Length: 137
Image (cartoon, rainbow, N blue to C red; front, side):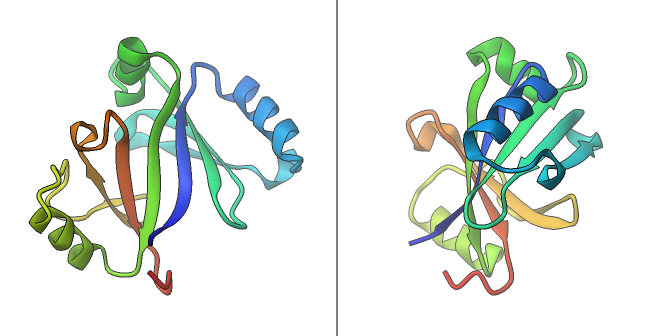
């Protein structure tokens, strides 16, 4: 079974979302990692790291895929990310199993290899896989 690396949540306003999640999880604001993700046109806050993390994503403008997601579905669960030690091998297994892929080959994002599975194969939930060396899957 795969380990959940993080849960991605689309939010309208990053700082108010961070404040709520920090309070709920009982972590310090200093532990939150912030990133500007140019290719996705969004700001991101990553909360956690000892186990499953929460990834909050807020769009820059109407060109952002997160903006389009929020417009269509509202703020909320965007994706669940699992880790794997060999993303190419896992993608092949998934494709051979008949699940629909967004990415047929891994792509780079923020220095990591990732790939998405289409939400139509998982009851509307977007699935991400991230290559994590030594994940033990």
